[in-house]
Image 1: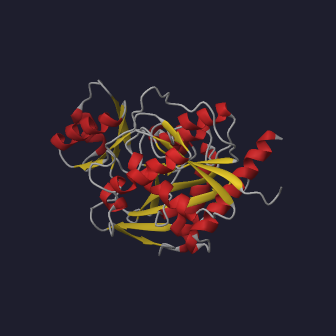
Image 2: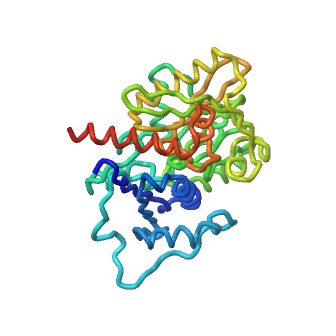
Image 3: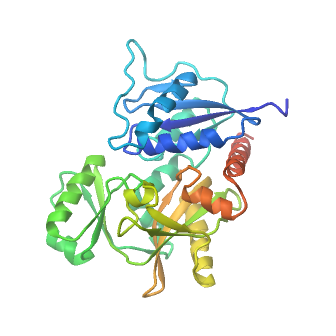
Amino acid sequence: MQNAKKQIAVIFGGQSGEHEVSIKSASQVIENLKKDKYNIIPIAITKSGYWLVGEEGQEYLENNLEKASQEGGVKNDFFPKNRIKFPQKFPTIDLVLPIMHGTFGEDGKLQGVLEMLGLSYAFSGTLASALAMNKNKTKIIVKSTGLKVAKDRVISKNEKYNLEKIINKLDFPIVVKPLELGSSVGIELVNSEKELVSGIEKALEYGEEVLLEEFVEGRELTVPVMGNNNPKAFPVVEIVPKVSGWYDYKAKYEDGGSDHFIPADIPEKIREKVQNEAVKIFKIIGCSDLARADFIWNTNNEEIYFLEINTIPGSTSTSLVPQSAKAEGMDFPDFLDELIEIAIKRNKSKSL
């Protein structure tokens, strides 16, 4: 039956520092999916790795949504007796929306599991997800195409590093960030040797490597890109932090933490350049369906510096991508419709 509802699974949670962000995103996605078009199957992945499908997933979402917005986040996990972590059987699923951020969700690992299970999913595939999550490898690829990136240095866990050489190369302030994480989790802007050492230690709590970058002063711009064979850039968004000196976790997620100007009030040549660069990066990384590329426009030298590309951007109604889509004329439910449609079409073409 052509008019039968699509079975859409929404996977959320996960074993990363962005578990709470994922819960909030998934709640908004589920709320805004059109119930006359879709049967929604919530799938929660707890912090200890249990997969809760259907009613159990919905219960986990409801029980932890408020905690996800509180300091300390989700603490009580799911530890059932005599229960395997992975479900033995899934219901019929037409498409998975992996509303996951960070490790084990946005880095290709979940995508590989879904492919092994034969489940179609939205957003980028295994390789593109892994590349985009590794900020250093993404920058190497982007730099090879002639686009500007900030100077950097990667430090591995247990590596002996020379502070003086790092400071001479990058100069203060220096941005310290986990190499494979998002949502500004674990990121610090440091201005002294002491802060640098502390920032590296904290960032290494989230992974095996840390990326140190020179701080490029300028206006922060972000560009969503949607599509596959002919991806299209959405209106450019300018982000102006209000509670911090830069776009950190507080500026991203606190109420009133930042202002978003859509479309950005920038010269036409800058708008055109940053949109073209976003589409170019989307293609060279091999992204699918939807992604968001972040840039800094240095108004002193008029250069645009690529920061990173997010293969599963934030998915609340007030997140950057849905806000940009709204400026393009799509409300959140229609935006989700479009994402599902292009993802299903892409997956069908793969199977032909």
